[in-house]
Length: 430
Image (cartoon, rainbow, N blue to C red; front, top):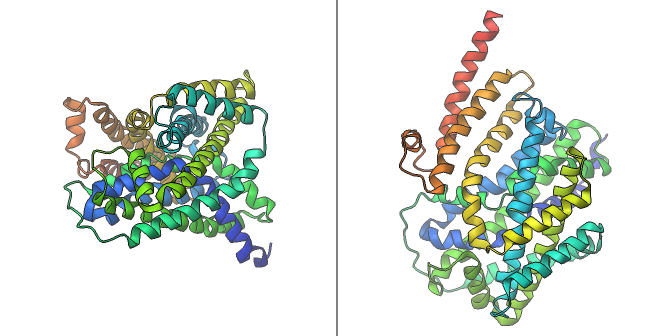
């Protein structure tokens, strides 16, 4: 393949497509809330958010594409089926357990409540997921065609919202005591975008192959270039939303929920008509996201466990999503935090190990590092549930960086070095 195929047009198209895959409308509620609670440290918080969202998406795609999206190879140095099991866990979390229910709850809270405050939540969730079911079970391409127009419309309104927020009169931002980088990093977990590469990279690579990128080196180059475009787009949008969230302290109370804050910002900066337009687009975008994720969930499970059909898994996924969506955005997030605090560091560790592995790293290194990181992240998870005062959590709290939420980074570095010594000693004995 010659370099002409890596032309600007193809890279831009791939980059924008990649951006659209990971830019979920439901994610819009997180950066403004982060900005409000970061005060004058909003930029550092935004950096943390983009590290655990935008940057990790790129690292994840590169790590999985390095294994040609073969998930058995991705996790084989831990155990034969580790990669496949991890993929199913990620698609379940990003699917019917957390993300899909949140699309319905976000649509209700952002698109319906501000205009019809007495509308029944259960009835709306039933109607929303009935539509999701019909369009997913029939493999309808209507939503795909609509989706081509949704992202540009959403970005256009958001650009106007961010510009209005930037030009809003300056506000005295307060200093808050939290570790801003850690605050942003953990808030970025909530998007669950960085778990996506585990099960979406195969689709991305097939798209690149259809564009003419056949060789592995060319696929990696195309992934890097288009990934950088997608990451840049995500960084700009999320940083802008964090900034207008910080300035929203002028007209919003800090006790406000994430969805209510987003609605309040839209009301103040866009006016009633544009707010309605934004709510409508967000609602349709959430519908599109729900259909895509439900289809991915059903497809993955039907391929792995073919005892049941694609339609069975669609029905199972939509029932679970409907029930959980009734809880509302904040409650879903409350459930998700302990789960994500445990799974994210493990996935991050696997991304890094696969990226630095030239197929020469001893499997024992993978096993020791992932186990060590898992022990530390489990302590964070237990603490988030509410069991703070126990021997295990207290012992892990003494680790460097643990207080700021980055104890798993210390665990990764130390366990990596110890495992490296063990692997070299083992090789010397052999």
